[in-house]
Image 1 (cartoon, rainbow, N blue to C red):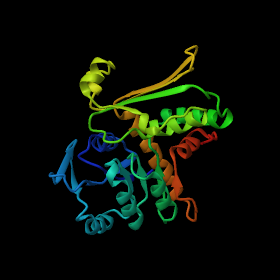
Image 2 (cartoon, one colour):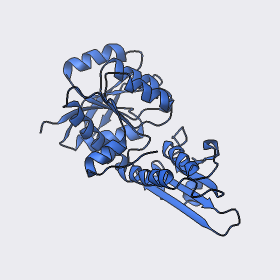
Image 3 (tube, rainbow, N blue to C red):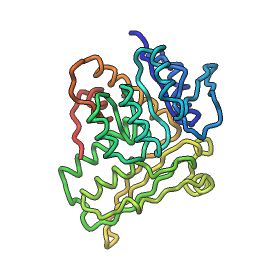
Length: 285
C-alpha cells in the first residue's frame, strides 16, 4: 500500500514532535515536511530525526498551504496545537478541504463539531486518542445510560495530573464527569483539580521523573455520604506513545472513509475508530 501523506501540526510542541518522530519510522506514512505553528514561535524550522520541518505561521499559512497542496495533492492533517487555536485551525482545514484528525483539547467543542458537520471536510475529533481510555469511557457511558442514578447520593472528586505545559483541564476528565453525573452525582466541571507542579507530581503522586514532561494520571473517587462505601477509578498513562498509536489508527480510518465517495457523514470520533477496529458496536452518552 502506498504511504499516506500526513501533515503533523503543532511543532515544536512536544506532542506533535513525538508524533512526527514515531510516524517518520512508520512505513505506512509519509510525513510531509511542514507544520502549522503559533505566531509567537520564533523558530522557522524544526529538525526531527534528520528531517527538517518548515514551521508555518498563521500570517502566512493561507498562501503557503496552496503551495504545499501543489507539492502534495492529498494529505491528512493531524492537529496537536493549542486549545486557543482549535476553532481557527478547524476553520482553516474545512476552508481548504483538508481532512484532519483533531487531538487538541479545549476550545468550544460544540462549535467545533458543528463547523465540521456543516462542511465538506471529513474529520476525526476526540478529547483523547488513546484507544484503551476511549474504551474505558465507552464502558462508563454504557453504565451511565443503562444504570442512571446508580451513584445517587455519592460525592465525586476528580483529580488529574498532566505535564506543566498543558494549559487546559483534561477533556477526558470533563467527559467522565458528564457520565458520573448521569450516574447520579452532582459535580461541576470547575471542581476538577488540576495538578501541574512537577515537584508535587514526583513527590506526592510518585510519577516517574522521566515522565513528568509527558503524562496523564487521572483518579475518580466516589464516596457514600455515610462513608460506608468507596469506589475509585484510575487511568495512569506515562509518555505519549499510546496517543500516537490511537491517532494513527484514526488516520487509517479516515483514509478508508475518504476512499468512499458520497459518504454524507463528515464528523467521526474515536468510538467510530474503535468500532471499525474491533467490529463491535459501542454506545455513547
